[in-house]
Amino acid sequence: MTNPDADDAGHGRQVQDAHVVWRRIFLSRDWDALPELLADDVTYHSPADPMPLRGKDAFVASLQQSFGLFEDFEYAREFAGDDGHVLEFRGRVGELPTLGGALIGAAVFILVLRRKQAEDAGKPRFSVSDLVPYCLLLLLVLVTRLISPVRQAVGDLTLSWSLEGGYEGTFQPFYHPGTLLFLTLFLSALFTGRGRFLPGAVSAAMRRLFPVSVALLVMLALSRLMVHADMIASLAAAAAGVGQAWPLLAPYVGVLGTFITGSATSSNILFTEFQVSTAHSVDVPPAILVAAHGFGLAIGNIVAPHNIIAGSATVGLIGREGEALASTLRPCLIYAAIG
Image 1 (cartoon, one colour):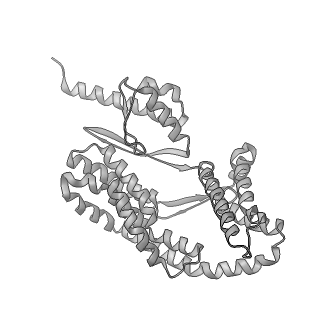
Image 2 (image 1 turned 90 degrees about the horizontal axis):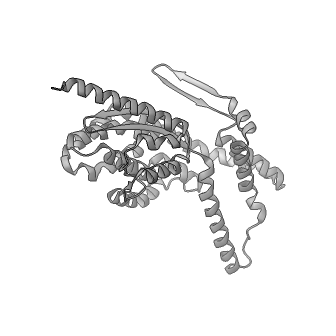
Image 3 (image 1 turned 30 degrees about the vertical axis):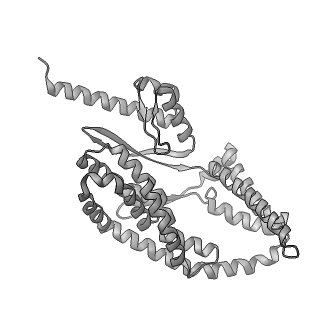
């Protein structure tokens, strides 16, 4: 006869050992060792692909491509149940992959602008000097990210802070994108001979920035209050009463989290554990609900009030944030329903 308890203990040790190896592979990006951990008929359900990937080669290739975008990758939490396991990770998408899309968008914008100028002869025309800030910013990003000695030098200075209650954070002043933006502003004014306009432009921007900053602080304070008072958790727990229909509504929880907190990361931290526990309650694979949640929190950025406030200030639409929210709300709900 076999001892069920011993069998369960042995299985538990195997799962734990597999988790240790899995973490090591991903943290060290040792992709050659990954196939040994996988079954021959492994199936990978990716939130970015409606069709599952089958087989070791397809799985490893997809993960290599996906995780090649991440910087500062690390595992945050682990959720385990009788029917599966969920590993929550966090990482930062580097500036270089996003620059590709930005450069393509800029090229399309220039082509459209040139065509428009050809139709509107006599109006102010586009100048090559207008591209100087973008070229300088691109150069600074490439130098500080690709040249190892420079990257190490600007990243060595790190300022950290901590508050009672476990709140803490870090800041790299010479590596931060905001520093590069300010440096680009001053260098562009110098190189294009427009330095005399800089004091007036900065003064006007600061006057517009103050009311926007107040609005952002109010929204952030409100979101933190709701989170720490467990108001969001209470709302989510009540929503779980819909039972088997929950997978259709799971993306909306992600939208709600991003709407309240203004951060996809905060929404993920806030609701991932809830999605996993709900999956067990309604007998749905946790990975499906976690993926649906990730889709919703990404879409929720277009209705997050603090994003709209910041965006409206950038394009000179202060006071019209309600119109922007009304315009993005319907697409957000439709996308969440499709997800």
